[in-house]
Image 1: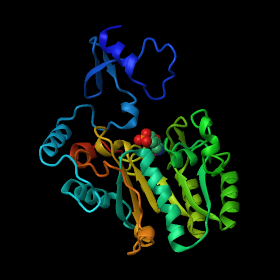
Image 2: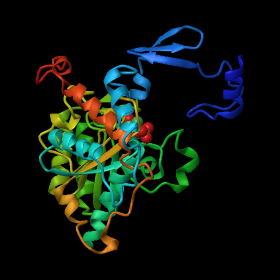
Image 3: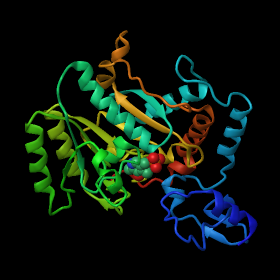
Length: 337
Ligand SMILES: *Cc1c(COP(=O)(O)O)cnc(C)c1O
């Protein structure tokens, strides 16, 4: 073990990694280009996991690198309450152009977990601001929505959450709608929805990533959303993994006839270069927060909310996604999913 790896072993606590003997330890990456990671010892590794599903255009993309560099020399960061900046405005314009037409507001955070945390808090406070009691939240079995407490609560209980079980809020989990279980899922949801006490339904559209790439049909998801709409249940699409053409369309929910009310985005949003989360919502959701009273305001934000470098990276990645060469790689309509 050379010096750097010893310092790593001595000082760094890596995520999702048992802290026993830890040999051989993590691989030291010196640089990355395209699909390849280059190790310190000269090995080339294909980054087939796209560094946890974040990378879209390959590593060290020059267009995104230049955008980050240019932005860093103009404005690296500014508090986002009471201040704004061009890169964030451009992100909002870009996303607004591809989101369903009912979506009018973009809320920034830093990662997928917080994008969902914000979505859950928005849904809960929506009912609170309206003075309506709708306490239950519904999710799908096998769900993964992140590692913060709210996101963990709406995720499946597993090895990952077991130390925290007593501290997670209660959620109703629907049977995952495989072809054989569709009817069971529908009847379970119908029963819950009929109670009138369900405030929100959160789901990973069309595919559960962390659960092992479990796919379900757009038809069944449409049926679930139809039930939700009939009973005034806020639908939260966690597109953290599926966004940015992962299933063929810009959003997985683009394959649906019924649209969600809140959409969480992260992972691919900056092409895999800088941390960023976005929670987008419809005018209907936003209107419940329109007030001069502080108690009705959404009192949530992070130090690095809408970081200009992240926004510049997101805008550069969006340019690449919309470029003709990238668009020509899309499957024709009807061939995805
Ligand atoms: C990865 C993931 C998250 C969590 O995102 P982080 O950036 O890791 O916090 C949430 N939802 C889905 C569907 C994900 O795949």
